[in-house]
Image (cartoon, rainbow, N blue to C red; front, side):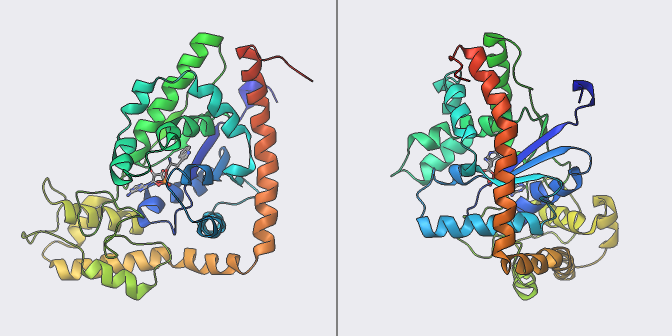
Length: 335
Ligand code: TYM
């Protein structure tokens, strides 16, 4: 196929650190499925990123399989897209070494996620945690991805990946596509239900702060009933109303209605009714994912078939890019 006919390439990944949150879903994963018809999509369970924080091996293995099934349950079709487990394709780590040699210590020191995680895991500030964004750049650049659908918290890492690509190209000649971030206008930063100034996170210690996409309806309703709001009474999107803004955003994403329409729908209604409606909408929204996930987890052989095929396709595609990058650097060819 001539280069002009080449479909644009999309890459994104998610860590296997437990059931995806409503934040992961709304900010990233739910946007991945609809891109599959128009683009060549590559999606990965990034297990190599997950070991930057100490993990129990049995738990990592289990969560990787569950994460893979969740991706398919969220509408990623392994026939249309390449869906694989990161450690099955060694080319990411290979390219990561090369890219690490064009990345500055100072750049990595400025990454806010590194600073946050280093503070949280002060007893294990390992080199992998520090160089994590380089591996993320390699994930993207080893497929020459054009766009990367992510939530807002990955913006800084993507910016670094772009800088690394530009620098490599300047040093060694045109090589990498400089990837664009694809961040949704609504839902790019879903907040904690308990502390709505903080992002919703898998690792929150307060179980009421986070909706997991496999939560049953009762759990979802209970968490929304307990969601923190404010001392005002009006359901409108405004500065300083973090709790209500978050609930309006979630309602808008779950129903597909614009924020102004959501405000109108609840004009004159109380916070109690509103929280109930948000809970109902989210439970309906997530129901198909739960059903499909249960079905897939009953068919482990199918999952394995999919990730094996995904790994082979990912390897082939990335190998072309890696081989070209090795030549540009001056590594001796052996084939
Ligand atoms: P991870 O696993 O933390 O999150 C996966 C995706 O979910 C988005 N996200 C959110 N979006 C909205 N609101 C939230 N509260 C919220 N929490 C998480 C994240 O922005 C992300 O898009 N480093 C990445 C994984 C990764 C990657 C990559 C992504 C590795 N290599 C290459 C893209 C391209 C991460 O830890 O995401």
